[in-house]
Length: 97
Image 1 (cartoon, rainbow, N blue to C red):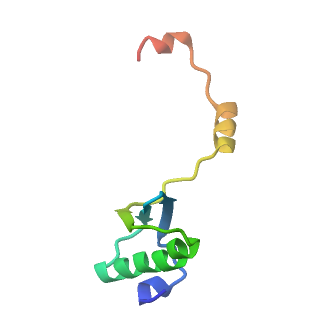
Image 2: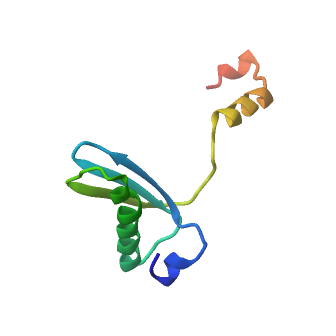
Image 3: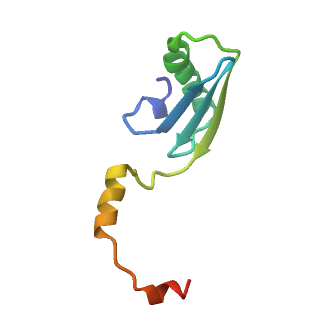
């Protein structure tokens, strides 16, 4: 990757890519804001490394970019453990909802 911010080993975020018959849609979630020039370099690199390497024809690469923070990772295993540890509520508590 080019640029000082992009060459570090720090995690920038995640990207989800979906291929359709005419376009490729990407959702890029960054964990911190990037300067516009770094952002466009990152999108170009994603296009070159991931989208074009899939060797699927496309008319356009459409990318939605968000800035946020990771608040957790959840899976079926997590919810199974939570259900085993959940508190029992009395029927009387339901009337206060």
